[in-house]
Length: 252
Image 1: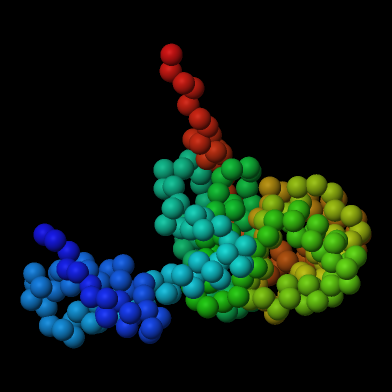
Image 2: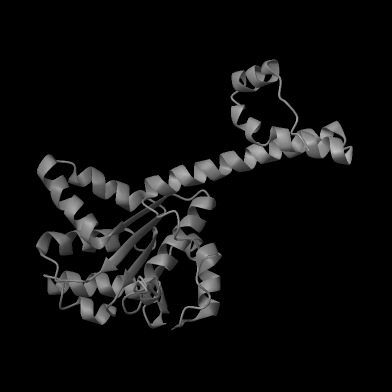
């Protein structure tokens, strides 16, 4: 069946009202309305629902991008066949985001490639959907940016922003030893957010191993104690999912 033509007047009116994107679904909605003899109010509700959902999705995408979240790392894309073991009950509880209300942290620990980043970003997307502010960054990029902020005089402002956000996600912490500035910054973030804001940290190492990688022993003990005793521990074990992404050899 031919899709209904939309008049130029209607197109112009929708664009004047900033509803031009409704034109993407309007022909199909009108066709369905005529075939099913729908009430005009039902048609209008369907059109407005389409637009409301589109705007909500667009807003989520913009906020997630600003937060540093990868768009494809969401729980809907979790590979249920991956050969990993973890506490599924705890993960389901974390997805309810009650830890945000209680200002608790989440520690996701496991070997390379088992989905630690996927879980951290997935929880970040859920927080964005709940209208929470989120900032997500790898530890390496975060420390590099904070080091640069010391040079241009914006370090204090940047630290205030990181302390204020509802959920701070630091991915791949403790891959290498941390110098004095990095240790001091991590100490300030953990202590400043203690019982005041939530953090998600992913790491290949248990927090007991962080102690030897931090430059100041006293700061190391203090930040590890504060973080660990306020965090839910999600331990993941298994083989790297990246093996499944390895390109196949071309067949002769």
